[in-house]
Amino acid sequence: MMRLGIDLGGTNTVVGLCTLDGVLMDKISAPTKTGDPDGLCAVMHDLCRDLCDKHNIPYSEIEQIGIGLPGTLVKATCTLTFGTNLGMSNVCFAHAFEPEFNCPVNIDNDANCAALGEFYGGAGRGTRNLLMVTLGTGVGGGIVLEGKLYTGREDIAGEIGHMVIVPNGAPCNCGRHGCLETYASATGLIRLAREAMEQCPDTCLHAMVQENGGKLTAKMVCDARDAGDALADRVFNDYCDYLACGLTNLINVFQPDAIVIGGGVAGYGEKLLMPLRERVHAQQFKIAPEGTPIVAATLGNDAGIIGAALL
Amino acid sequence: MMRLGIDLGGTNTVVGLCTLDGVLMDKISAPTKTGDPDGLCAVMHDLCRDLCDKHNIPYSEIEQIGIGLPGTLVKATCTLTFGTNLGMSNVCFAHAFEPEFNCPVNIDNDANCAALGEFYGGAGRGTRNLLMVTLGTGVGGGIVLEGKLYTGREDIAGEIGHMVIVPNGAPCNCGRHGCLETYASATGLIRLAREAMEQCPDTCLHAMVQENGGKLTAKMVCDARDAGDALADRVFNDYCDYLACGLTNLINVFQPDAIVIGGGVAGYGEKLLMPLRERVHAQQFKIAPEGTPIVAATLGNDAGIIGAALL
Image (cartoon, chains in turn yellow, red):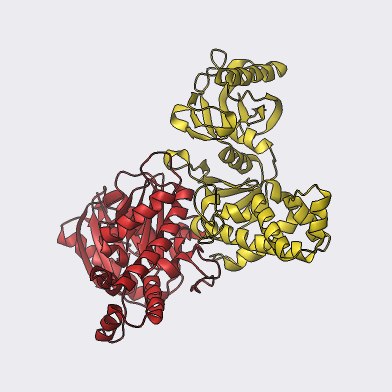
């Protein structure tokens, strides 16, 4: 028996063939048909058949199809209730793969699937309780407790980015002010850098931004820091303080076995993780001398496919 | 079959006789023998026997003995590792009730037992995922997920009071600054009131404090507010803002089915809960129009006994 995991993104639909213990054997993809539920389902269905055919796997050998979705959903009815980036709402996937595939279809949001993927096959292997924190445009979260995804009431738990850490702080898209997301996302790092640059108009960051057509990215802040820019270093330290505050809050509440950090900012690797660990371990509640392990995600985009397969 | 639940407090040891579904039939108590592990165990043992004898229940009819402890512990080995208020460390309770009681002995901390008690027999009845928040000297937390206590790594999860909500805020005993506990505990309310009184030396609160020998309590702030004192009202509103910030953070992460509020400050009842709900429901992530239920604990001190019996 095998499983199929689908990462249904706003741009691409990727279907992966996985073993029952979460090893990704192969994956194929096609552009996502946004705004067209029937077309979108037909593409997923075709990709599932093609992948099985390619590996000579009878459709009856597929034990489960899982889909990771960007949006709100009701797991019990296998329904996407609202997916902004997919341009559709109230789409039920329960029978989308019939008649060839008569197996159960399970769905969850993409952040949760990524957490489950890292839990089974990535940086979270061997843990029971795992938090995955994704530092991208926003700050996403996935919570695995006692080996299972925890999604709470209305399947919307895990919005760790929307924990206020600065009262009356920067406005957040969620309507609150001072959310972790507004400080610890890539977008937050860029905003912190822009604010600092205004105070200090003569740094290497200004030159880099000018060369880049006025655009500032999180990576440029990291590059400027690596090049010895003092302003970038100060901004990065502030960023680490905010992120460490949020992670320590989560640790004191959850005491997970590990925190896995993914997303674009995690690409800065140990240069991010080392100062983070230092700050978090100095603050967190603990009994053992060593603090909660904070590690980088290892599966990249495959985490969501593997996690979906294992839903 | 019946169960025994023990609330081992720094002052009193209370043993309760419970049905298997958590109905407290009777309870008896004696002073806690602090600093004397053997004496403390002997008192618990005696109380267990006395309570069974009183109700003509054979010792063999006791299916489980549970103990709620104030301190850090290792559940797997049934050991209190450190209990400041009990004046002892590294005490194993696994065989404390033999030979009469050969049933399993389970332990957990007192806040977790209270949460479990409210979950089974109090304000949290009918939920699957429940957070209990205790507003006393500190801010305590107990987390019930999928019907089970969640205690995390080293059995120390649930320290929701040690979530920083004000960076560089008031210093906390835990070593951090700006923890929820420093703003939303009874102690926090008193501190907020003291700070406000310094700014505004002519209010009814000053007179009340003077009448009370210079001592300010959380209840006095509530009483002054009820009497129409503007300063007390402002302090109380600030208090609600901080507490609502913390509760909303928790809801966005956990999306529990309900939050049960206990502890001294919860004695202010709907006058606390109504403004809290208003603030939290306006800020929280939700799909359904109604926000997460926020309700008062109903079992008082019995929650810890019932929860211990049901460990």
